[in-house]
Length: 438
Image 1 (cartoon, one colour):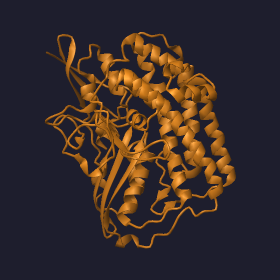
Image 2 (cartoon, one colour; image 1 turned 135 degrees about the vertical axis):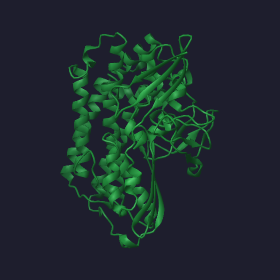
Image 3 (tube, helix red, strand yellow; image 1 turned 30 degrees about the vertical axis):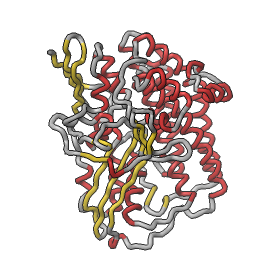
Image 4 (tube, helix red, strand yellow; image 1 turned 60 degrees about the vertical axis):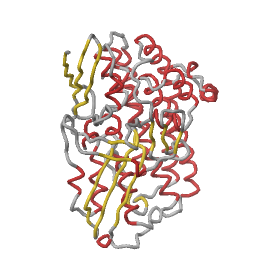
């Protein structure tokens, strides 16, 4: 057997992939993430409101999702917290927009350039120089302006607090946000799927992903050329914990043609493994994949239903699920922005009945981040954080093996013959070492 260690480039933080080769195939694979900043321990002994400023620093890519999970956990611990419909909608909007900009950058900046490593001449996707690469950066930067309109800044905003949000906005702000969203929509239709809205909606109705054009078509053709439409399969078990009406619902798929409701008490996290700074997380004792593939499969997206029926949870399907989720998020965001016009006079914030120093309780906050289900647990005594625990999407997907099962991403690489393919499969889960170990 031959052992090969590959330091992963173009990831958030530092991660190492260890491949064990036997007879020209990957016999075993380990995802090593060594660093750990100990955000959870940093929070212990602090006033609970400090968590709103500290947890968004877990990650510079999905920090907003951490804010949303944190504020939900705090509200659950406090109990009987009143929220206006206005505040709920704004929180949903900013969370979804962070996911949209993340999806765009991930595909154009990280996924497509991998094909250049395989020998493809894709000048438009050349890092730092390619037209598509630059356009993706530009439109993603436009998208986060919507978050800034409501949250004051991005990343690391802390505008969501127990009881609501700290910002007010005008009709002009809503019009500006809708104008920015129109630009993102145009990018998706013109560049990503290469067709009119009417044509796209028609194809989606029956799940005819083969009719899609633009960069989706190019990606699918490249996957077929290199066999990436059939590799990267893992356990075929999917989990979604958060909810964003109407496009994301919680639940899980056992891998046996059965969709089930989610029981949070069945989620268990164990100690850090011997070879990675990440913990092991299991649902009912089993490893589950989380993320856009899980969300879109569970929500019954027609494109993903047809893709999964043929190609299962392959590299191609995992990537296309995330790419096509952009439309679901854009559509829901527009609907919520338009509805806000009627709610603009509602209060942004309701004052808490309890004084901070008297708050005692335990709470859980669950949201969907770009990479999947994110969970924050907090225990507070007399206003002070006694215990804080974070389960990130990266722990679900990139976490290490337990006594019975390989990690989700580890299993997806077994049997591959090309180390670049292995890196690409790992990237299809969007490797993020800082979220894995936080």
